[in-house]
Image (tube, rainbow, N blue to C red; front, side, top):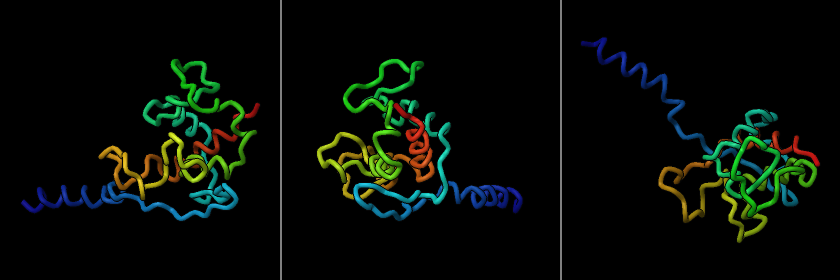
Length: 147
């Protein structure tokens, strides 16, 4: 009997860190940019590209770019080709974290913000769309997109 109860408890305790919601990491906005990495380490450009082209991330609903395998790319926002030339790493990071700081009327989601948002799907309330690591991965990928 004890073994039947103990095993599920061990599994639950072992899984608890992955079930806990990660607190947003602090960052500073300096001159329309977040100059320092949210994680303290560089992101992975390959993982970043996978996030950008994944339909659930919504990037390609509005943006187009050098993604020949992707059909139905958006044209509401700037083409991502050349993003690494047009914007610094810190400027890209701020655009992903909270584009509304740059343009309060933007339609771009705030991917790493939870406060002050009103039109948020129930499943995303109180948690960011992307993790700090995912933000850094996307920034690393966008920096590779030169003209």
